[in-house]
Length: 115
Image 1 (cartoon, rainbow, N blue to C red):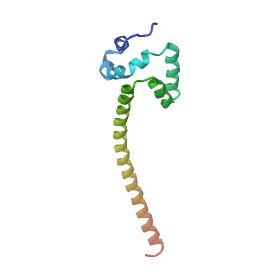
Image 2 (cartoon, rainbow, N blue to C red):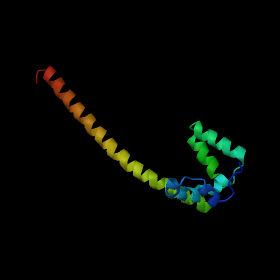
Image 3 (cartoon, rainbow, N blue to C red):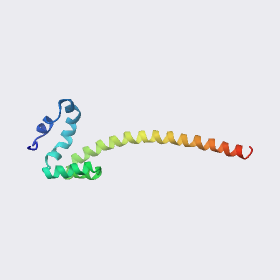
Image 4 (cartoon, one colour):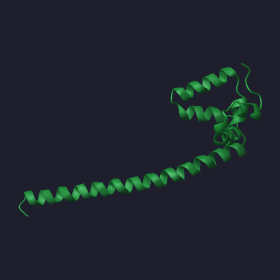
C-alpha cells in the first residue's frame, strides 16, 4: 500500500462519520505524519502502543515551526486549564471529606475521653 502524500489523501482514508471530528487534527498534525517514512511511522506507533506519550508527542513535533509549536501549545494549554479546574473541584471535595472524617474522629476521641 502506498502511503498518502497529501492531506486530502489522508482525509480520504477516514470513514465519513469521522471526517468532521478528525479533519482539524489532520490539518494540524497531518503534515508531520506525511513527512514520516514508513519506518518512522511504525517507530512512532510503537511509542504510542508502549504508552510513551511524551516521547511520541516529542517525535511528532520534532522539526515543527514556531507557529506550529505555538498552536500545539495553545491547544494543550486550553486542555490544561479545563483539567486544572476539574482537579481543583475534585481536590476541594476530597478536602471536605477529609475534614468531615477528622471532625467525626475528633468527636469520637472526645467521647472516649469522657467529654
